[in-house]
Length: 200
Image (cartoon, rainbow, N blue to C red; front, side, top):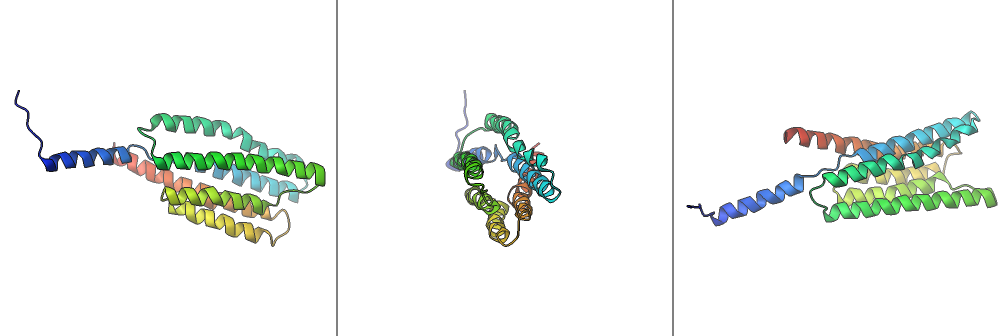
């Protein structure tokens, strides 16, 4: 059998092509940020409406955040199956958002305890401050500039919300969710679809 020997340049080209295929084999779809951007925006706006018009039953809308964990787990499991590899960036981003999720859970518990024992609630600015941290870090390590900008806006809105009476901070919270998660998620998803269409 006469096998053609590869030249050094051909070998380098093949290695380079393989690396590029691995690098582009998986692209974040942006579904998670879209989901949470929508959920937090809706919950914030409904809560604003509930306070404004004394429909306190509508405050239960925040239970949607617990329900939304189910599709998030399904989405994450599906995306994990589709990955050809797990990069350091993927692992780091995953760790950041798991930590964020537990932090939000702890904040919610603290708020409930404070309300029950001292009749004090957690100011919306605290949540927006926390929103900004994983968003900026993820944007930096994954090179997603809209997330970095969105995370900075979370901090700006956190400060701004301290100058307005309740329930207006809820509008800042809705805006935070839109700029930090919904818009970047839509941009990431559009990029993913474009990449997918180009490789069909």
